[in-house]
Image (cartoon, rainbow, N blue to C red):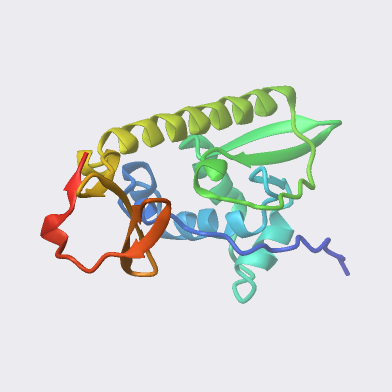
Length: 185
């Protein structure tokens, strides 16, 4: 009797772009299913050990004749999985994993090779750069009125709790006029 090490599953999100990705579309259906399942059994770097029997039992529990080795080979050939070794043990890194998973409290179970560590650092840098650029672009798209402040007859205004307030002689007074009387400066 063979005792298999349990690979602990994690909940993962599948990006909607997965379904329209041309590289993924070219994969066989069972390979796609294995690829999706492998995300559940990877640590928070997107790494899982080269343990085909455990993965088969975890991803295809009711299908004992499945040979996941061929799915792994196809995913390696498509550069969706990157194989590497640390201390004589083989692992696979899911190449786009950290691009699609937002993990608040990451846990890392498996060691990384130096080349995988560099790849992860490069992806994280790219993601950070994209976030900064996206933020800059979004701010530049803000309507110009958001940069203006509201005034009524030269007095500063604020909107709070769904009502307009006017700062007049140091006191905040509820605005009773029409919104068309508000000027933006």
